[in-house]
Image (cartoon, rainbow, N blue to C red; front, side, top):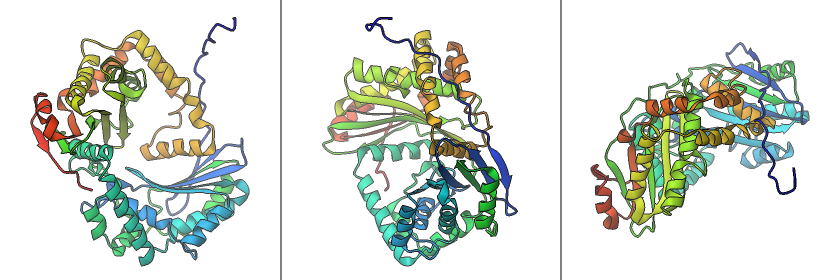
Length: 450
């Protein structure tokens, strides 16, 4: 090889996900311990079996609001003292309310394990939930909603999930709405916390330079007497709503760019076609050289980028494509995205070269997602959330490598529904309504609720 020759990439590195040692406490709390000795750190994540889908119908955003409030003050510490305790441990602390679960995580040095779990237990089991903290957190949430209501991309995202999922719990964002947050009281927060934040269905995941016996001992110390209480059942309705077929249009006067969303209900995370769908997405719209991005960015020069993604959840998910395009090209973008959906499942299936490129993009860097305790913990959270087998990540590279063109084409034909996709466009309707009308669907003008 000379200095003018490009190096030849080797095969994708195999992933060997570390073993998960499992146990449980008498109150039902599951304990997962994963040994990772590369660094003297440990990551603790408590996964609660309630997320945004558990929001009461008249209180969208409640699960996320509770998650924000428990991190304000807990145990004997007010907000400042709690932040100081985290800083003294040199820890990273985070509460996230996802679609199905809420996770509370803390990453610190192994030598701080005892103090870290004391802190984690305070936040989970003994949040103060004071009126003052509630008023401050609620006002911050209302401010975020006011800001989001002025961002075209956020408007389009919220309109899309509403069009696809309707009244299903997947159909509202984690932040909720201004009306719901204003109507929420501290009693609503306390009631939700008492019912949803319990050991029932919860999992404590520990990843780092610590053995399973020590993890269980420490977990028993801080969570062993955590009462189950009147726990809330998990919400698991099937996501089988038929998306609205109208073009959902949001008027934005004078907009120089249009936000375009095309989406449909997708399968659950546990679908047997998972690897074929992820690969299909990569070559269709999931990478820079994908068909949709080359079409809209390079061939038509109407956007800086367009992408598609599968958001796979417990009871179904969302497949969507989004792009920010020139306002006068919104109708063209929608038509071209639908055309790409049709062709990849029809008379222009993936080529061998496209499949090779998609496989390479997915597999050659896959191993880097499992380098640190935090990354391994996030992977374990996904395993716990969707009840995935222990070899889920070990199988990814071989499964994607084995895929054929026919496998990916069959997945496209089975799951893509371009004629039934929901379409959302945020643009200046006074200027571009006529062009959107040429797409052959009724136009429903709407105001997105924030």
